[in-house]
Image 1: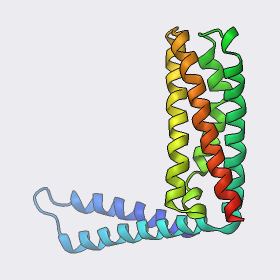
Image 2: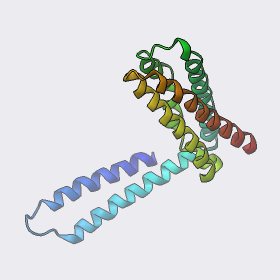
Image 3: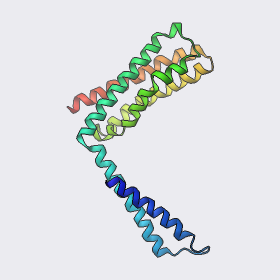
Image 4: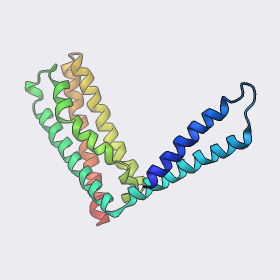
Length: 180
């Protein structure tokens, strides 16, 4: 409900500000414009507070943490399967395999990542996301190399991606265990 109120205030302020700014081609009446600006900032503040309250809800933190752990487990499993298949790899089929088997799990993790800050703090968030981002960068490199037909480079970076995702999962599991 609070999110909706915040969004309504932001939208109303935007529309009113746009209207006020075109009433006169030369000058803007700053008194009503300042009131509209204040309304917009108030809407942003309400929206941020509502999102912060959602992110810190205990049930949501527990659910999102479990979701992230499961998605990272799935990423590690899928990338491990790709690494195991390196000797028989069809380099041109690898991008489609990554898109179909790994990307959906990456998207699930990313959708819940803000919960890490609330559950474990900024340092834990930074540690986990550093490893996760490294894995994602290596996986993107594998995707690009394989799309261009560079089998040796794709085969070299796929294990590096797995290593980074495994490290992110280990960190997340460690922070989750210490929080319980």
